Structures are given as C-alpha cells and as structure tokens.
Length: 296
Image (cartoon, rainbow, N blue to C red):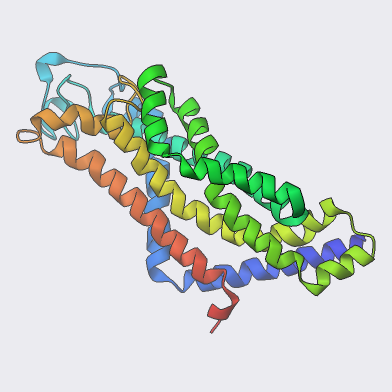
C-alpha cells in the first residue's frame, strides 16, 4: 500500500510538472498571473500602505481636502468626496473584493463538488433526488434573491459570500456529476472495486484527482463573475456597506462627480477590469496546461 501511495505521488508530481511547463509556454497566461500576484500583494499590503506610504486610514476623512487631484495635499491618487485617500481605499477595497470572491468560490466549489461526486457515484434515487433539488435552485433567479436578501438584511461580505454559495452550487455540481459518471464506468474503477476498494477510497484516489482540474478551471472562471457581481451589488448600495471600502461601493460614491474627478471612477473600475481579465486568462492557460493533448 505504501508503494502504491509513493507511485501515485510521483505520478501526480510528474503531471503537475508537465502542466507547469505547458502553462509557462503560454506567455499571456504568465503575464496575467504576474498581474494577479501584484494585485493580491497590493491588496494584502493595505495596512502597510496605510501606515508607511499614504499615512491615511481608509475611514479617515478631511472634508476641507475633498476631491483633491492626484498628488495634491499628500494624496497620491487623490481623495474622494469625503476627503478620504483613494489609494488606501483601493488597497482595502481590493482586500474585501478578493476575499469575498475567493470565499464564495471555495464554498460553492466545496458544496457543489461534494454533491456532484455523491450523485454521480451513487446514482439511483440518490442521484435523482440531489439533481432534482439542484434543478429547483437553478430555476430560481439568483440575482433577484441576492438583491432581496441584501436589501432586507444588509449582510456583511462573509454572509453575502455564503448566500452566493448556497444559491450557485448546482452549476458546478452538474459538471462534477457528469465527469464522475464518466470516470466511474472506466475499467480501472471496476478493477479497484473487485480488489476490495471502499467507496471513499475510490472517490479519494481515483475520482477526485481526475475531477480536480475541471474544478480549478471552473473556479478560475467563476471568481471574476463573483467580483463583478459583488461590485454590481455594492454599486446598487446592496453589497459591502460604507465606510468599509470595496471597489464596487467606491464606484457608487464616485458616480456623482465623475466629470470633475474622473480618476475616482477610473481607478476602481480599472482594478475590477484587470483582476477579472487576469483571472480569466489564467483560467484559459490552466485549461490548456491541464489538457494532455496540448503536450505538443
């Protein structure tokens, strides 16, 4: 058994190295990865930026210095209508937007993949029950539910991410279910069952490693959608509530004076655009890198 585990580990390590070599050959994906890493570092360094670079907290306001242009009065990227430093709020807003999207994607992925693997592997009435429940959720207009819940309860970004995951997991569950059914019918699965492998071992050793690339690619596609959806809700005043910044509510606060301070609209919008674009390009690179047919 230990020998089997070591062989499996060597095989998975070899596959990962080959996938990384294919990914590195995709220059667009590598540049997108570098941009995303820079954005993540910028957002995670919000506290350092506030302390050592700008000298402003994201809530600190100076109304007499409102709408300062970049470089004026010590504001590197200017100030908003309340006299708050835009650079500091961009960094903290990126932390909120990225954390929200990542939490929502992970929660959705966990719920959907577990349900999909159970449905695809168990089949029968279990599969039928879980998929009919997923169909019911898919028939519900999720954006309407999100707007309704946000307008009534005004949840924080953690609770909002949980609501996202509870509404949107059926999409990935159907993908994982289809792949699980395809893998379950393979001869090596039947051979493992004949040799006494338990269902948990089959799922953990054979099904999950084969489904994982699809899950990663799906996550790379859905995280930008979550970022944009959170920005849209915050722009409508239903997402992350001020004074806690997010890129979406920064756009909301800047919409009334974009003619005089266009940078306050351009900067958070550009951050949303760059983040969503870079993650999508990374997802395309992962899709090609994880496809063995792309070896040549």
